[in-house]
Length: 326
Image (cartoon, rainbow, N blue to C red):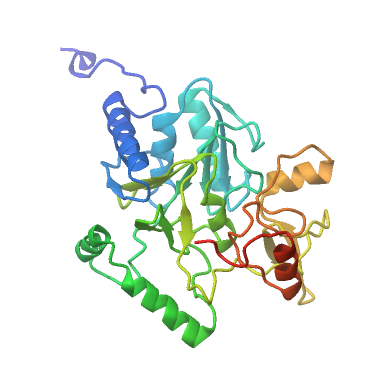
């Protein structure tokens, strides 16, 4: 008997790595997630050649959606060249044979960890966010079974209480990132560990956002033109990170999300977190409109409360409501 007679015949990988049954299941669950914005849909998370916690959930969603005509972009903390982003991009290109890019405007499918690009995404683009912890009630409710009951009843009093305690004790929310949001006025959602700066970008966005946690086997979605509101008190409105005095050390740009770089002399300098946007601005290349303009104003007037009396007066003169319009 020959050894080759006992082995299975060679089988190449399926297109985009996942088998047809896995893709079919994922696409059905994605449709359910889009139909119920913010609702966590369980799915059978598959093994992929990537360690849990390094983007397996986002990768499975990307592989389930990607097609030959797509142009894929992968960013990690705003950078296309980090080890995680480069390895994911290389794997997607090898398994699906698709074109890859670092240009946000050219990409049709964007997988991201911790950032939403500065340039506005359009209706033809899909954003996939990697999520480590999908349960927004985890900080106040340790039991997942109880948390699901609270979601079913839309009972989020503990989250409001936690925000109140933060404001009383610290004068500011302690969520540096992953600040919880209400989606379509119904489900509390963890927007992945994006900074508070990026939370408003989900509100009435033109593009579809899909979020997936591979280790927790949960996915959820924010369809285009969906109401996304941060948890906030009417007299203590939600605010993004205060970086008004920060300027990019290469381009001098302000009012875009920055990364602080400690220096040997004890000082700091700042650089744009979105490296593709920084590259285009430094090279003088054309860019798409951004979510925050050159003065730091968000593109949906009235969504964020003005910070200074001058800003409030300017908006009142323009007839824009003072404060959140919820």
